[in-house]
Amino acid sequence: HIYLDNAATTPIAPEVIETMTTQMTQDFGNASSTHFFGRQAHTVLDTSRHILAQSINAKDNDIILTSGATESNNMVILQTAQKRANEGKRIITTAIEHHSVLKPMAYLESQGFDVVYLPVNAQGVIELADLKAALTPETILVTIMMGNNEIGSHMPIHEIGQLVHESNAWFHTDATQAYGLLDIDVQEDQIDMLSVSAHKINGPKQIGFLYVNEAIHLPSFLMGGEQEKKRRAGTENIPAVAGFAKAIELLTPAVKAEHRARYAGFKQQVLEILQANGIDFEVNGAGSDDMVGHVLNMWVKGVSTYVLQMNLDLAGFAISGGSACTAGDLEPSHVLIAMYGEDSPRVAESIRISFGVETTEADVTAFCAALTKIVQKNLAKQAGKA
Ligand code: PMP
Image (cartoon, rainbow, N blue to C red):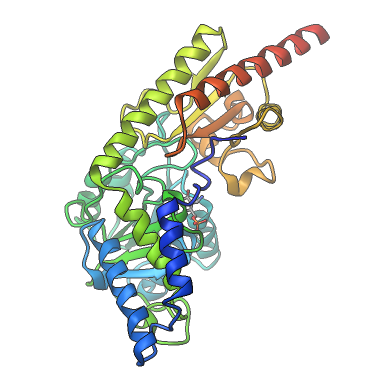
């Protein structure tokens, strides 16, 4: 089986497994204990937190460990709403955010908040003019993802940071998909809060962080112990945190640049092979030269997402019909709908493939051959019936 679904999750790097195994077997202490075992665990926590913070040019104290981007996103949205409701009830986001943003937004709407969903263009990017027009003195939060998980579009974060900071609003970005490929600097880009998940970068699942600028004091989401400087209760998962830090250490700027180049090469390879094979397809979000490079979303004309995904699975290729979280219930992609409209055939005939550190040129070639066969067979079948 060949795995081409790295936007859903990634395999854990061997170095990360080694680090985590050491932590689980040797340093099992509770980081809040004052004895030797506790101090040892706390040292690992501090060292790891420093690596997390450095990776986005933040201060160690501004990193809150969470169970992943879902919790980070939920916390930002719900706790900002709670904290700032007396200053204003307007929140701005986009139509193509992950459901861990969109669902808390729907909840806040039910509680009387005014949520603005900025539209995106055919490249899956917002227009800055729309953001500018939407910002009011009552806007308390702007949350716009850095890179999209379904099509890989990359939002103009630097410009957004500048615009938002001309207002009273706080600026949060969900960097879950972009983090592994882009160099992020929260100070340069005026990002107040930022979400990341370890399992998208060859780290373990259910661990992530939320960066919160020191000027912002969000009420704790989980109540209990005084961990994370009273910002997130619960005994820290030291093996997972250490594994997360190891995964980040492996991702030097040079490695990220190398991955970007490799994935761009894979994309080109897919396009060339499918074109040469006479497959009628279009890249969703095409035209943007600034994509978060591991994701390739394609409209394969005339064959349904379901048929493509199922037959690719049978042929040994793991891809996705959209985001993994919604693919299970075969709901149409809210991202493609936002980009192309509900009636576009793209909504029902698109697939997402996403590359990772283990992807090879041979994988890509084999995938293209399998896809070609499936498309030709199904189009022939339809022609036979017609
Ligand atoms: N945001 C984005 C953009 C994502 O791609 C994901 C994972 N699909 C999440 C948030 C949620 O991450 P997790 O499931 O690790 O909490």
